[in-house]
Length: 258
Image (tube, rainbow, N blue to C red):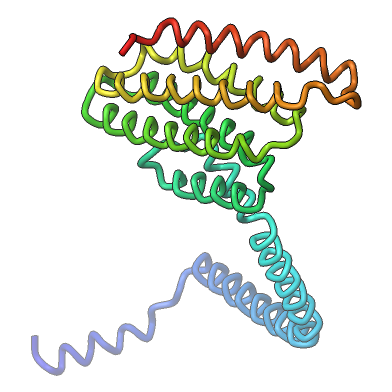
């Protein structure tokens, strides 16, 4: 194609007219765009006027919410962590929290409350053993955790045995005797389910419970000639003493002679 022909063809483009459909569509698009721009401009002006009020309220709300959250964390956070740790087992993340909370309770308790607390903690160790026996298969992990729990269980019993002498109230001694009775029954139930590796530790724990019963019996029978004892307390003491005497005599008979 020569230059002259090319120029001639270009001039023919001037005669091309757009279709009516395209013109209508273009007009609608332009009107919509103009309408959108006007509304956006008005909205920006309105937002500019309300921004100080809106963001000031939001900032105040955020500050209040943050303060309430911090207070909740500091006040209820430790309690929630302790409650969450109650079902934990050795090796769990919250088990250290559980043991630490027990240590705090022992520290703040008076001397007459400590034996009862130690019996309660010993009961928790038996619950942990029961969970391990139910949840874990017979393997090294189960044996390792069982041994750890039994050691802690014996430590709790040893503390009870050492602290019984600090109890001057017979009512509190009766409470410890009742809890120790439950502990002995639960230990007998759990004994058959425990790994063979902890059988020796279980036997030592049973002997510790026997010593505790003897020490509680000594507390309850001391000074029984006092005239100021109430009839109700005396009756309850007698019932516990009968149980303790029967328990210790049975345990002694079961022990092998030296």
